[in-house]
View 1 (cartoon, rainbow over the protein chains, first blue to last red):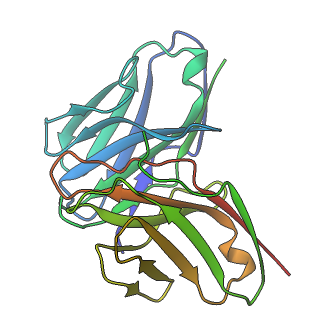
View 2: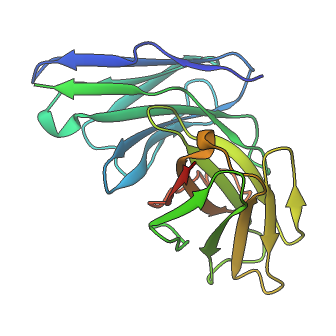
Length: 113
Length: 111
């Protein structure tokens, strides 16, 4: 089975801190995604990557950046965390752009104080 | 914006079939219908997908109308562990078309 892991289940940071959220997948998938999930708003795409060192903006990239130095790892970076970035962050991977399914990690619940 | 419309919530008795509807009247010819679910405090989980034919797997069945403007996910014998938010998503197969999740249907299965 595909496994997508995220570095932390729960994280508490202070306003202005730099925050790294790590995601690792073990199935050699080319495509990886970062979403955030908020009550009443559903899942929203932040960034995705279709290859090492490649990245594309999703629907809400402002305030975030990403890094994909290795195929299995996709990092989400909050350069200066703000309280409105308190959310559940979900990472996903996808083998190909055909009808393949996305596999999600367990999520990181980030609280910014 | 999500291209699908789903009821906000549904209830189902344990052991009965749960039929979750989804409207996708603007679906285009190359777009697939996907169903995911999210159990509380977990990441979304793939259930099933289809293009125009009905599909069945070990988890569920997917019935797509002939005009493809709506579909129904069927859980044949719902259990308490099927309580979750169910998302119906349409997506093409071109590169760069990520999944767009709407608000889904909260299914509550009770004994």
